[in-house]
Image (tube, rainbow, N blue to C red; front, side, top):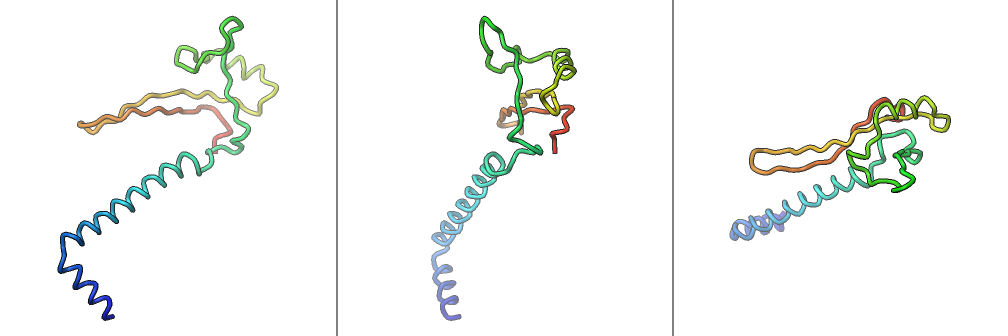
Length: 125
């Protein structure tokens, strides 16, 4: 008990130093929590599908130019998808996903986000 009283007395004698130490610990804990949250969401948590190792993405292939990098212009049309799904004998299920680009702002700064949404899939958990 004497040690605690002695420590508290020393901290109260030097309030600036004590504030800097507490602020340093708070920033360190906050940064550690933020980094872990991002890593957990991106790398550690499994994909929200029943069998993520079995997911496949299909794209159009041009025999002259090869496969195009995925852009909005190289997207597969919905009628093509309907034909692929009707003629499918290989996959358990097929789904459509749409890439979305969002800009979030609070009036001062803006953040650009990329995302995807899936439709008509029994693979979704």
